[in-house]
Image (tube, rainbow over all chains, first blue to last red; front, side):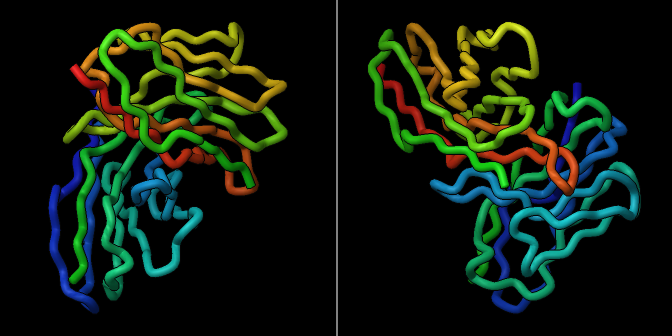
Length: 114
Length: 115
């Protein structure tokens, strides 16, 4: 059974703080993704990675960076958190190969920036 | 760039009512289509997907969806909903772009089923 875990379910940070969101998957998937989920906007892709140390910008990368030092771990970094980054953050993974393959999602981290 | 529209943001139904959630996408090439569901407090999970073959796709829990290429649509249906179907539903399209295979989600439809 595929498992994607995220380090925190709830996080409260102050404006200007550096924030790390961690994601780990146990299925040896090559592809990993970070999304943010906002009401009425669905999921929007922030960054994705198709291999270790490889990363690509998604639709809304501004204000974020990522790190993928190991295959199973994909970190999202907010260098200087702002209130408009208050959101639900979802991590997902998917094997490489057919694009019909399913993405598997973690439980999400609800981040509040005060 | 591809986009996905879900026209119903909130739907309220009574148990045993029939359900149809609309999904339209804009992309001219070959697509794979998905419906994901997020039950309260749970992970986003796959409900069903279409990638080729029969355009009528059956998924878990009695859901089905029909791909109509001429209408760029992939509507989700269930003949008789249950209270346990209360959840948020997301339509998604996977298409090949310059950045590789990208999954684009619609804005979601929040379904509430009254017992």
